[in-house]
Amino acid sequence: MSRSTALKIAAVLAVLVAIIGIALYDLPNLVLGADESESPFGLVIGSFTSDVLALVAAYGAWRAQKWGAVLLIVVNAFWIVQAITSLLVDTAAVEMVFSSVMLVHHIVVITLCLWRERVVSAA
Image (cartoon, rainbow, N blue to C red; front, top):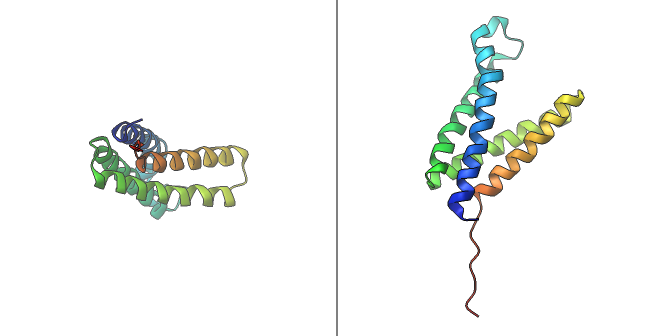
């Protein structure tokens, strides 16, 4: 697999997670506002910000820009911390499965961003 293909796959995976996060968590809580949202509003704003950053990073990664790959790594590293925290704190089986899947997803995206093509030695 070439580096540009790996970056495009990473970008698509990041966009999918960001759009799902925006649609299912961020927008509903932003519409409710700080007073009516069940989640702490700082968490909602932080989640929305990281999702928007992921979309910007995915654009850069899709275009094989170094800044896009770096930003995508940073956002997914942040998301890894969230997934691990959720694994340690949450007790519901559904949340544990979701956090586990997200943890694997974020590790895969980072791996794809760091992907290098094999160089055949001329020995």
